[in-house]
Image (cartoon, rainbow, N blue to C red):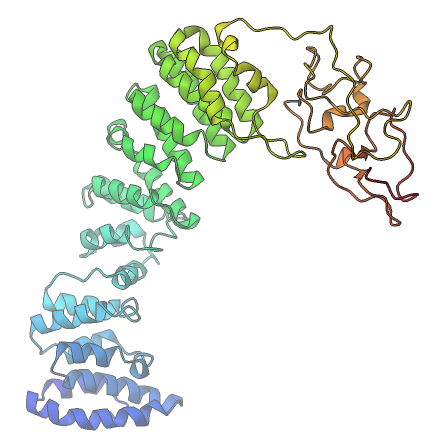
Length: 513
């Protein structure tokens, strides 16, 4: 040991009796402080030899595992075959206990897998399946000069490690990758399942159990790749219908999209119950991802076309999308309801206004285009779904607006009336891009950009909230010029109707009265 001859230690330690081992142990312990303080390369072989001698003289399994995993001796490394040789004369049951003790030490279990596997082979016991051992097993699979599938085919721990591999966090983070000549882990596991070496149901259940609670995108992509490689049959998809439904409310968008795809395939095959479709739609229609909501509305459209008897139930679910924060999705849902209302019963149509009113969020503060658009609000009236819609009056223009108390000076002067849209304006059936009417009853020209006003009851369905094109407004004038802010009824905009006359910003401070 003093000479650092590591290869000679196992043979000497194996010839000792238990009494001789106990006598040598205090001497070996006294060497540890001496070696611990030496960092030169000459003492590295001495550390490795001391590690072998100490574990060979230990009589207890827990003590042997502590000696092997000690920090001052672990970094010296050593050949696992020499450690197994130094312990080869021990009882197999004792070797198995040492292997499990090492596996329970999280800091060294991953790096100690080669030694643990040798001890397990020597003991003939079941391998430990702690997280560190599973990660070490995965890293120990040879990939150079062969494929993962060929390496796993003859692995003695295959059936024990793979189920745990699907449960250990971060173990499958590289499943999404493949390279030239190597299709990757998903293809290897799916191929071994086809050969009968792995259970197909075990792989599917393990994959879905990791996708359901979510996690890091890299890990989820790996499990989605495994799900793609398994290529589930229609019966296997139908057996996990509830799992697909439960993925929709809170799962990662990639996982939710895959679950939606599975449910759509089952519905096309006629194997999706109406209650499951309703539950999935209620979860998907209020997700923030527009792509998922559009796909769910398309699924409802196809389901109602395919089976008219489901219209009453599915139409009520589609009407709940009126409360979505995105206006384009609200109007898509409205178009779906209008398209299928002729196939619905009177009772179902009578409940649609209540669904629309219950699901619509409150109107936000001015300057943000949220809430229920006027088109949806108009159709939420009961008579709209009975086919009798009252046409707006074109003969009665809205009354001239009252100048607010906070309007700037000169707003009510002749030729400079502030064209503020009146909330009571019926819209007069004009195009939605003309958002308001002026006090004289005539419509302003498109160049007036009155559509930018957030209070208009004819808010355009494609217009966004006031953008940089027409928000060059000012509430107060300052020496540095106008500051940008959102339009409000008492501020003047550079794109506001030309009839408004005002002084240049910065010439005088605007009075709030």
